[in-house]
Image 1 (spheres, one colour):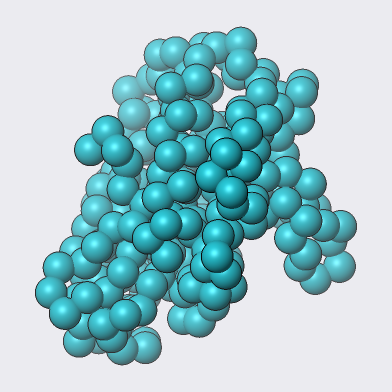
Image 2 (cartoon, rainbow, N blue to C red):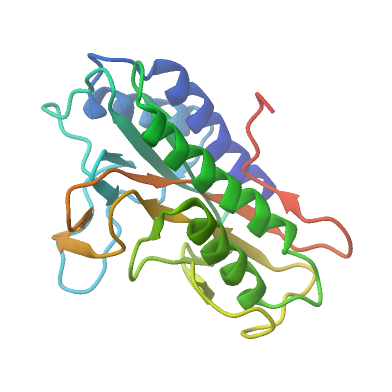
Length: 243
């Protein structure tokens, strides 16, 4: 798990350095594939199947502005000044999976969008502090919801974090809303992907094929870490090398 998630962090670090006005999501996807291949790993998202949807075509999810998650990495998706882009990366190596996401800015963004990004990231930081043996999944969910409420932001409906390990998505579901003291018990050795997704204008979402959008077209931010529950401090497996 440490190896696969370290590759996720490597991809996010490198793609983050590439993001600027004029770059396309397609170019970012190509570079992600090159990095993953150089690490003798596989892209976990490419070919992923769910329900009655066609297999997912891309190695990263590139979600711009009102796209919350699962955005497509097409050539015509070219970043402009003031855009934000959420990059979600999944990696498999040696039978274990890694998963992480960050939202990056293209050029200069408004104070309102900066507020959205800062508080979504704060929710993730606060959620990770709850990742201690003996706590419950609801403790994570409650602090994410509380952070959104305090910031005047909206938790995206229907979208959650999850357990991760020998498959990309495992139990438990890690909701971004909930009540402390409820849900599955956190135990040493568990690995979970925590991913708050906050919207600027509404909690309501619209799903079109793979992609989730905000119903009102307002911007959305997404940050995700895969975290190991230990006997003491939580270990962030997808930590950036820049930190």
